[in-house]
Image 1 (cartoon, one colour):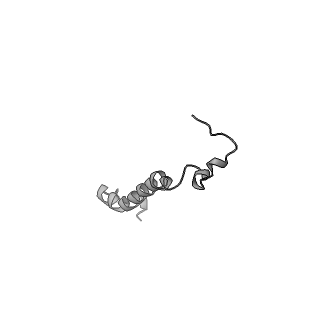
Image 2 (cartoon, rainbow, N blue to C red):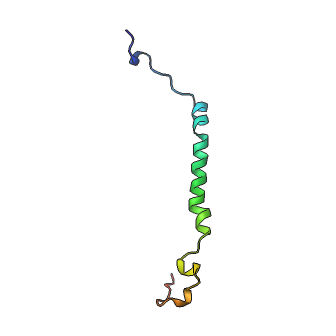
Image 3 (cartoon, rainbow, N blue to C red):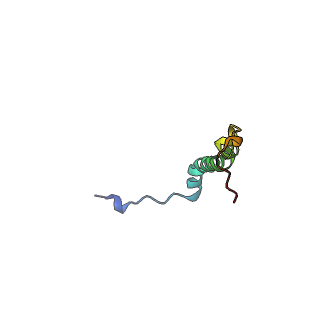
Length: 64
């Protein structure tokens, strides 16, 4: 009687692995780009700047 250890599966060839994971890899890279670069540029640095309320600040801004 043959057991599974006597007939192991051969490793997958590299092109098959690339074919299986190219789309998830591209989607991951695109999502990281949008989260780190594209989306932050769409928003002002603070909510005061978005509402144009910087003249109502009681505390002076900290300059670095």
